[in-house]
Length: 357
Image (cartoon, rainbow, N blue to C red; front, side, top):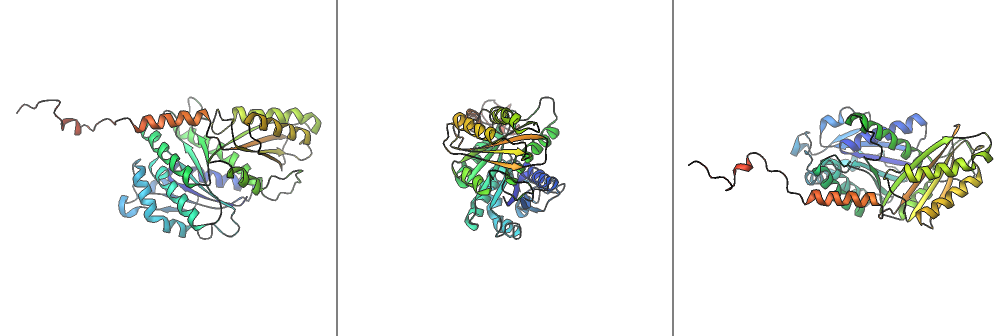
């Protein structure tokens, strides 16, 4: 699947860089090009992909300080500059655009929905959002920002593929190490998904091409992706249970949004050496996913890979019934309705205490 990536904000830029690196290291050839957009100069400097600084006339490259309304305004003002910067990245061969953003920060949560809307107006191809939900401990501002951003971007994008920061955040990790590990984990999954539609040297029995991805994502406003792998035997008959058990693990414990099994549509991709993938195992896995998700639209296919393991990737679309998303929306509503602590100076501008004179 030929895709163009646009990272918005600090988290979006770093995740986009990880996606580009994963695509290059694995030789997938799926990512046509990428651009990182931000209002903060210091967040763009370390990135090893093309970058664009916006909002300079207002914030002078210092960022928006978590104010996502300001992030939206600055993106609105500079959308033409962003679209122009994507010339040569989005071409006639591009099959989809992914706007990548952390939905809790200021520039990403505010700018991503605006950019998605503009790209959909300009281009006649699917425009998706790859959005990262803040973890439970990331503060009320991030929760409220993400709630407002998610509500908006779901309306604007063709689909919003979600990643919950709490899904793979190991206890005891530093914040920097945790986010780097999450980015690599997400890049591995998304990289394999995009690669599924690419021409490979191996021969798949049932190809899962880019149209399967697009048709799956068409059935729903929000999506999640799961992954699991296991060692495979050289004898494909011995791998029937390997495929089915790995598919179960992918759905039940490996989703980018945990506690997500109900869906309107699904895509199951079994990756591995063609001689080790059992047709019967793939079909059983597909039927099990169909039963577990309650969806009658479960597509499936193989992805040839030189590996001693078998991996199963599960893409779910139409996941609005997920308990994890409901829990996040409750946190976002609560955060949005919580009065912030007054600034120290403001605490004195009231009648609760009488002055001496």
